[in-house]
Amino acid sequence: MPEIVLINCFEVAAGREADFFSLWQQVNSYMRKKKGYRSHQLHRSLAPDARYRFINVARWASLEDFNAAHDEGFYRLVGRPEWAEFPPFPTLYEVVNEAQVEDNFTWRPLPINGTALGTGTGAVSN
Image (cartoon, rainbow, N blue to C red):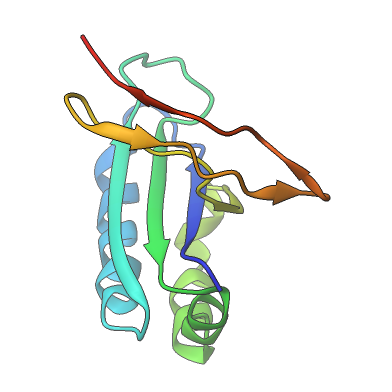
């Protein structure tokens, strides 16, 4: 099973960022200790009127590890009444292409409903 990526968008009202971040840190600290956790990035919108002020991108070794990490302890943390103010919109993804500046990359054709997304090689430049 390939690595999976959780992209979780949060609605956070202006002025409530510190409260959201405090709650998010508690959950993140818990999840980082789970088997299969790889990394995360929490993004904050530069636009104060963005619908999703914060977006969490977390990488997991597998879907099985991700599912197992969402145990009773996780649900106890996110079930706290304070979270109702910060609705999440989570979705799981698989990486189908990744590159970094100055790296050569190879397209990884992965079937999506039986159809490959593309093949080829290339270089990323500024």
